[in-house]
Length: 129
Ligand code: SF4
Image (cartoon, rainbow, N blue to C red; front, side, top):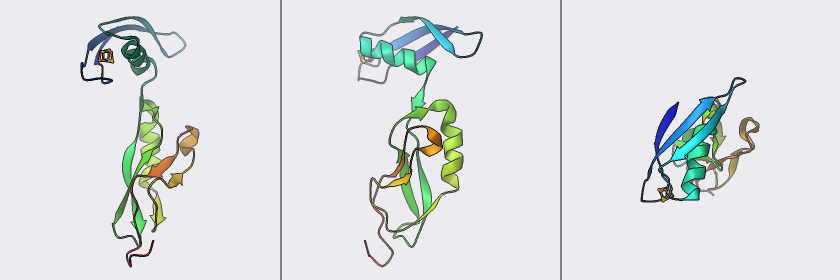
């Protein structure tokens, strides 16, 4: 099987073709990588096919805040196949203001070794920090 990717690591945006096979017991094994101009891009392409990860960004409800929503993200990329599970946790979260930028909202979310953190400060509606 083949997967065509555009490397996102630098402005050159190399088109990369990854040939891979599915293992009998699950998982994917890369057989060859063509088109990358550097080792970094080759490693990225291999990971993108074998174990793709993404940083999740979203918003949660915040009570007594100067804004109705608090923007959040994971502080590390998580496996792409777990994004739906993480979004299910996020959609049920509610916090109370104030919240500081960088504050951990959920530690080690779903045991994925990534924290869910606030990406901005939201003060209380009366301006109290
Ligand atoms: S493969 Fe290397 S040179 Fe090409 S876009 Fe990726 S990082 Fe840049």
